[in-house]
Length: 171
Image (cartoon, rainbow, N blue to C red; front, side):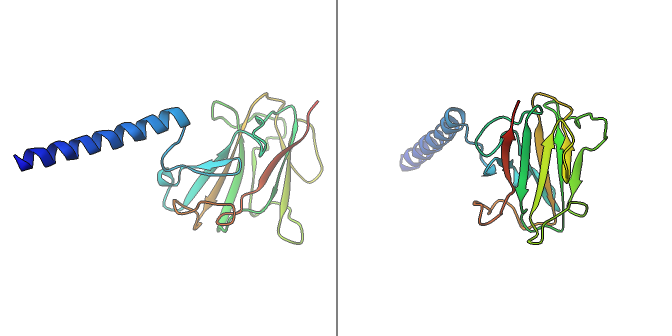
C-alpha cells in the first residue's frame, strides 16, 4: 500500500512540474536553454563543440531591424578565436546586394585603438565597415563565435560583452 502511495505521489509531482513548465513556456515565451544578452539570442546547447551562434532581429530598443534604416552594430565581442557577423533575410538566405558583401570576419574588420568596432548596416554606401541591406524590409544578424568560452553558463553582458545594436536613422 505504501509503495502505491509513493508511486502516485511521484507521478503527481512529475505531472505538476511538467504541466507547470509547459504553461510557463507557452505563456511567457521562455525557451529553456536559450541565452539572451541585449538583442542577441543563442541556443548554446544546439551549437557545435567549437562555437555558438547569436542572432538578432531587433535593435537594443526592441525595434525590428529594417533594411531601409541605418543600423549601427558597435562595441566588442566576447573572447573568441574567430568570429563572423552575417546578414540574412527572414527566410535564412544571404541578403542579395550589388556589392556581394554579406558579412564581416574578426580578421578583416577595421577597429579603433581600443579594439572596439563599428559596423554600419544600411541600404546606401557608408564609410568604414559597411554592410549593404539591398533595402529589404526586415533582416536578421548572425554573430558566430568560434572557439569561445561562451556557453550555457553565460548569463550577463559582463560574462559575454556583446556588441550593441542601434537604429540611428530611418527615412
